[in-house]
Image (cartoon, rainbow, N blue to C red; front, top):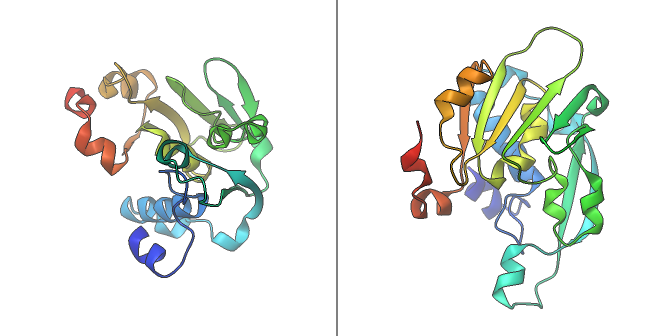
Length: 197
């Protein structure tokens, strides 16, 4: 699906980084929601307000030596209710999904949920009780979180190192669903997924 979007000229992958853009993450969100039978709940693109920051040079740019490639733009999509959510990284917490302090750093991608932490939770205050979705992930999931959080309380587990006992995390946090988000290159080169429980 993303290849079709890319081939049609949509900005779904960064030029200088290996991650999908926020638009790419939005399309992934649409696909996930459709797959789990919640396609009717997808928030339309036009309901978001987009804030863009240019001058993002990602890991592909840093490693390649192709310094002539122009920088990317990072988009933060706001639905307008971000102050109802708290992201807790274990090292601290903040309102919403974006730690905008990172936008003044080279590692701008860490603006999404403050980058990589062992376990991060995102919860919405007030309202009706919601299902808990456990997201076992690499960094591709970071820009997906703001969309999924509109529907689920999230427990986000980084699959690096020994964070592989997903069954134990699902039980500890009473997860109703589990989603594994792992980029394809990592999928075919890592031994981590072989240790999943």
